[in-house]
Length: 302
Image (cartoon, rainbow, N blue to C red; front, side, top):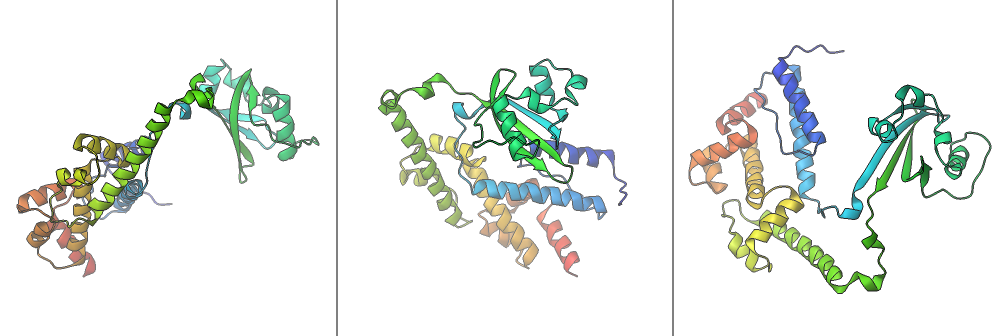
């Protein structure tokens, strides 16, 4: 066991950062003062995690979830190996007005419909019943749920996930009622997704010293600047200019740490005529000055 003595502020910053990652904010970084203590390693690992997630996100294509992909209810129930309930999420208790002390220790099989209970007892070895097919849905408290079960072998527990997906009646329309307009809209969305991906690839190949000229880029891709900015941010979770700055800063960081090239030369190669502007962006991005990073890198190699 390792005992660490740190300031409350540093501890709170880490906790806050982890909560923000859980909410999907991966463009954050902890401020590190290079204190050379053991907790600094945890802070560095957190920043590396956020950076890795950011890099992976930029290499994926996303389509915004549509209406039929939204959960209206999502509950988690934990049982032992005999499907006796040991814990549930608060939302489940509130939805059905259940007493946590009453529900704990009761059988999940008695809550589910007979078909699902029969399937679970057969597949997971509770009792001697057998079934041929898996029920596609679970009937619980007169509500229908899609469900999944994950077994935790070490603790011999089952984690049961129940969810209901919002499905509007318009998605049950016969094919001939879907309409040409809707099909064209879906095709257009797919086309724009591919256009944005090609533009990102084009930006990846631009020299760092070249200024990003969106007017020239959009001419080759049949898209206007306003729509490009909007769709790029939706697809890659950052703006077009922000993405190019990210590429520049990462390249500059590698040159500073891995070589002896003068800092002003690096700034010029990254497209910054004024060294002060480069320093400003670098400090904002890595929370350290270029000269301090070079000095720290030399100390670590000596």
